[in-house]
Length: 179
Image (cartoon, rainbow, N blue to C red; front, side, top):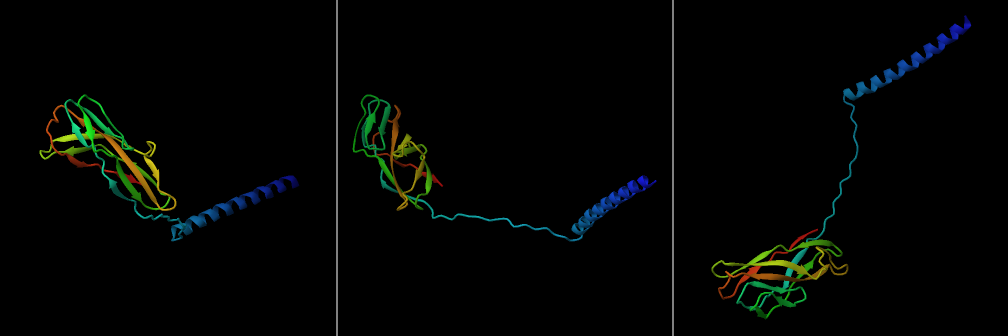
């Protein structure tokens, strides 16, 4: 009989402990349902930098072009000129130059999309295949000492058979930066 009695005591003790745990959980749930609030702290971060500015220090010039046939006139970022198509010759050409200024050692992505130049009658000539002196990389790091970077710009000007009108043509190209 004593064996049975000891087993009964163990069972009753376990039941009592288990019921106590259930009651404790119910008590916490009840407290949360009656206005108990839990809060935590989240971090907020920001990095504020000065804007990057760009100024033109030299225009991209294709120079004087004598046109007999269609072709391209290319001025590279070093100021060298090449032509394709018979009858094309140029003089007075130069690479463009742009100076970026901003926070020291700031990485800046630079993109130059295609552009057009126009005559007085709104006839367009395509300017394409822009190049820079930045090793064909679009990511430029501003100088760590002074926050500057000079970008030399070249491109190709496409002369088609329909562009036979003489005269000066002017336009702009856009330098897009992001950082």
